[in-house]
Image (cartoon, rainbow, N blue to C red; front, side, top):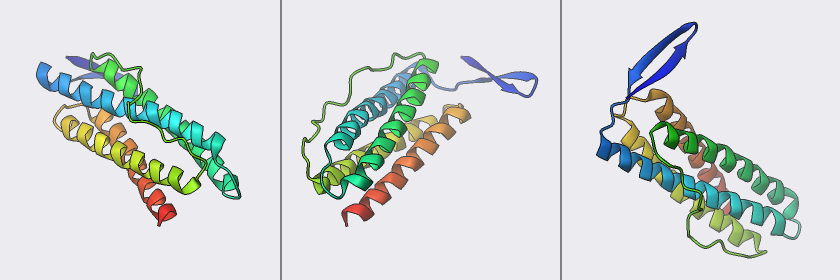
Amino acid sequence: MLYPREKGNCKVSYPLRVDKMSSKNLIDKMNDALALELRAINMYAHYSATVMGINRMQLAPYFSKEVSESITHADFVRRGIVKLGGIPVTERNAKAIVHTTDYQLMLNEAYETEKIAAKAYTAVMDLLKDAGDRDLFDSIEQICMMELRALEELRLLTA
């Protein structure tokens, strides 16, 4: 399969080196990551609305920022799945979202969510390494790095 890529005024095509079985596995892993992002959107929006007390001043905007980031990540992953010939999922990951007003529990849940997301994106990167789509690999790598930075920030917040 060839995908056009523009460089200045020049269009070049490059092969996507993914066989049918590997492509299905890659699409499945990307759909797993997408489902996690869809879950994160719901979780962070819920926590932004329900966090209480003095911590609300800092955490409500933090959780809202995470909603926006998850929307951006989901959109990119969705487009990557379509590029690979797959169908993006529309259902979020089935892991229950803990309903609480306890900010510490919210942060712990956010930490676990980011940890799972970082693993999911690492798995996608492992499959993309040999796929020949450098743009997709680089973008997923950027998302993975953002997840790892969020994980570290949450580790410090929950310490």
